[in-house]
Image 1 (cartoon, rainbow, N blue to C red):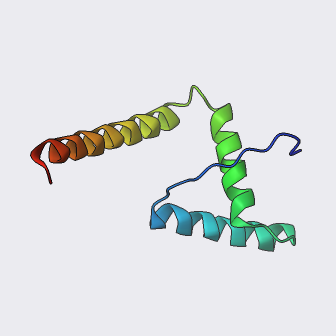
Image 2 (cartoon, rainbow, N blue to C red):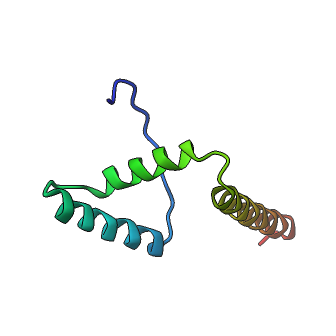
Length: 83
């Protein structure tokens, strides 16, 4: 399953992290197997990538991309002012 591994650093809000932890706990209870946060995040990413034409997924991607643009623009302007 993991022949080719890559490491990725994710920056997640506390709310998303908490929800993923709850999901890991529920999966552990339902499956009677230890389910880690890493397993849950890999599954969510894998399943999300299968839904490439899902409108909610695309809306989420757009919202995050716009937020990054706003942050970078603000940081660039602060750099020009010497802050």
